[in-house]
Image 1 (cartoon, rainbow, N blue to C red):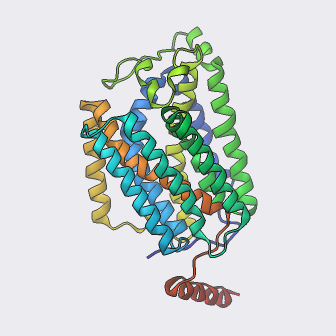
Image 2 (image 1 turned 120 degrees about the vertical axis):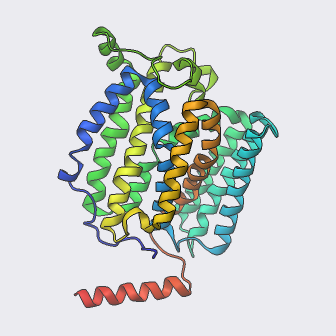
Image 3 (image 1 turned 90 degrees about the vertical axis):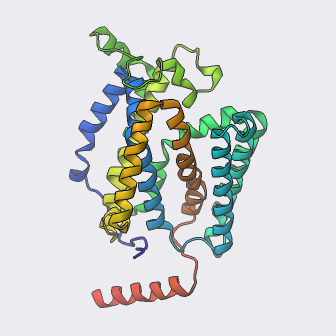
Amino acid sequence: MIHGPSTNVDVGPDARELRWLVPAVLVLATLAAAAPLAVYTVSLAVFGLPHVLAELGWVRHRFTGRFAPAALGVIGGALLGVVAGRVGRNLDLGTAAGWTPIELGLVVVLTLAGVGARTRVPARVGLTAGLVGAAIGTGLVLSPRTTILLLAMLHNWTPVGLLAEGLEGAARRRVLVVCAVVFGVVPMLLTSGLPAQALAGVGVYAPDLGPLTTGGLAKQYGAYLPAAWQDASWAPHLFAALAYAQCMHYVAVLGVLPRLAMEQGAPPAYGAPRWALAAAGVVCAGLVGHFLHDFGEARAWYGVAAAVHGWLEYPVLVAAVGGREKMQGPHTEAQSHREEGSIERGR
């Protein structure tokens, strides 16, 4: 059963429900400052694919019925193109330099498809799609590699947008204040290098420590940092901030959004059947094993799924700018009547 977005402005975590974030932030920030390579690699291997699947469940929960069929066709076609390119690259059918501009072009298409979530497109939706699409298109022309890395960095902050869309009123304001600290203040502090210096002073700074076969920290810079940044003195600190943000992205998607969805009426695990959950568990465990055997190859194949959910965020977040209007069709119209009837009976 598909559950539509809640209209209850009071639905959402309160201060008491968010208290668990305090130790989580402190622990993850300290670990990221002390051992950024270990935090990046282990969190990616263990939580990467589960968070992809969970975020797709959230998108299904919040955005079912909000895109016109034509827009869905464009989005599906563009994502298939992304998958084909990633798989082709992994099979040595072309190079990253050749596929990256094509992929960015598809991201522009996906961004513009976000306007297809409305029967009438408000100016702010069209403006958002146009500006974001133009920015990505400019980056595609100037430096595709740098652009795709910058987008990879920004991806760690997308839960802020998903939470803002999924909440209203006082609940939204509370959560955005928390996000300002978790996704703003803490990463800036880590980027400054002060936590790393403090930890080095007491002998617990090990930037190249990692349990997987990845080489030193500098060999993983390419996951986030453009080549021009990798020799800077602040590069390890920025990478630590991004490793921390990656972890908090996982915390939000795996720990916060599912609980919020259930408060809004969705079943546990977004209603996925047990066989699907079991299959997902087997695949995720197999991928962890692959990461242990060959981190680079496993990350490349994980990147196929990661690209799908990452680029899907562009039309979704563009649509979110316009609010919660659903496309009207036989199913959504009938569902709206049922919801209205339930509200009337509850009065």
